[in-house]
Amino acid sequence: MRKMQVTSIALATAITFSSFIGVTEAKSPQYTVKSGDTLYSISKKNHLSVSQLKQWNKMKSNIIKPGQHLYIVNPNAISPTKKKSSETRKS
Image (cartoon, rainbow, N blue to C red; front, side):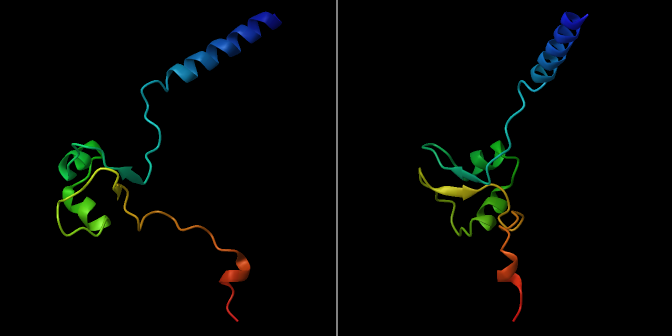
């Protein structure tokens, strides 16, 4: 009976892990521009508009260069790191 329980647990674990195949990892809030990238191609890959990318990255032109880091998540939506309680107290 014990062997059957172990086999059942192993099978359930395998099924659980196999259901995650093809699921992408959580996106980083930033994207590093690669050679050949355009704002349009980056926006489409990340389901954004070019306007959002430009606004979030405070860009006035469409010019980007390899190695440049762009926010692909609204930086205002990223929760700031928590301050220590002693820092947040008012005197």
